[in-house]
Length: 77
Image 1 (cartoon, rainbow, N blue to C red):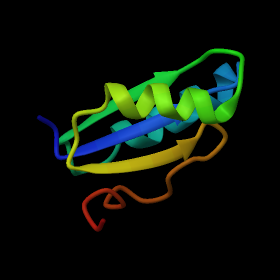
Image 2 (image 1 turned 90 degrees about the horizontal axis):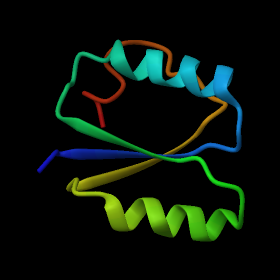
Image 3 (image 1 turned 180 degrees about the vertical axis):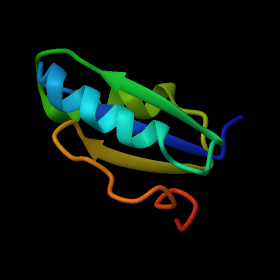
């Protein structure tokens, strides 16, 4: 079981999603899983689907159009 589940609902924004994933990979904290839902539809349903797949003790919801600044963000949660 991962300590942190990072849940991302992506609305077909591949460049933004890749930027976010790259910023997550740079984190010093590595005990996480990433769950991405890339389907059209109701955002609530997408979040519910992502949540049900998660195994982490801590859930973090991120939008696909952000970039994490700094490499210790996850470590400091």
